[in-house]
Figure 1 (spheres, rainbow, N blue to C red):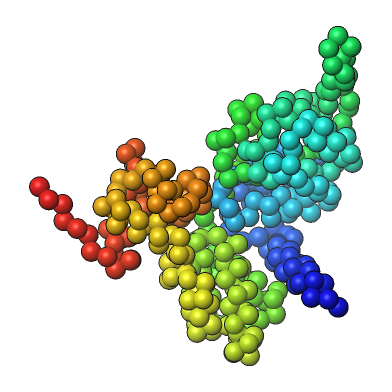
Figure 2: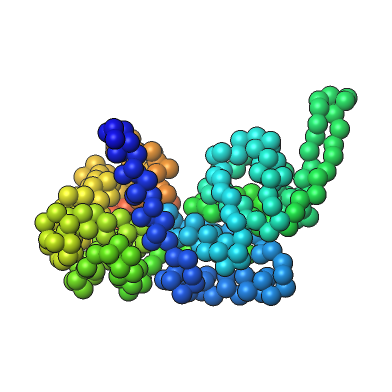
Length: 335
């Protein structure tokens, strides 16, 4: 076997691990109790009537389980899922091909729905509302319009930026759910379940440590668990203890609160270059050589959740907790 084949097999194995950690029953899905209870009601009612599920929209920060919930709904409905993403739907023909190839009761999952092209949205409106596909064939005076009937289907969309979805598109969803950050207790339950599926032993103190450094998201928790598993496999006979987790966090440059190198650099830049703030988003992007959108969508929500960063009309400011965590002294202002 060539090195290329070995690397390909490693990637496939890693993806299979991720899929194996994905819950396949409501009972296995930890957290988001309000969302889960409402979804169960919608799904069970639709099954009882012998109908397809309403179109659903999930939004929230990355790694909170939007895709997992979509596939869980599919399994509960006994429906096949076809998936795509907003950036992949560039032309009306792209969405038309997907919709016309759907079998009755299938689910179309659209990730990053906020990036769907406006022309594609125009096709989705009648498709979601009345299961009609309106197409225009030809150009100029010879152009003609015709409609195709679509089979019963469900669209499940996921996005991190619900505000970027157009109002007409949002209104076509029968239910919209916002996913919140997870509690440390829920994360510990997820870590214990994942460790069991990965066939690795983990001690209570290690579970707590991973939970505290997981950025309140299951994806981060599972990623840290797998890296700690690697360390335990080589050095500790497949037992994840506190040492394994601390060594893993050190290697990944993650501190006790879950802040990575970029998180700390962002806080330090505001403190040292902007006197603790306020600092504009574009100025921070230039100072860190980072895309302002990435700072706003990926780093800011977590830092604000921890109480280390404030977002004000004038710009971003750091809090006293940020100074304390970084071990920096706040400069007294001169009057």
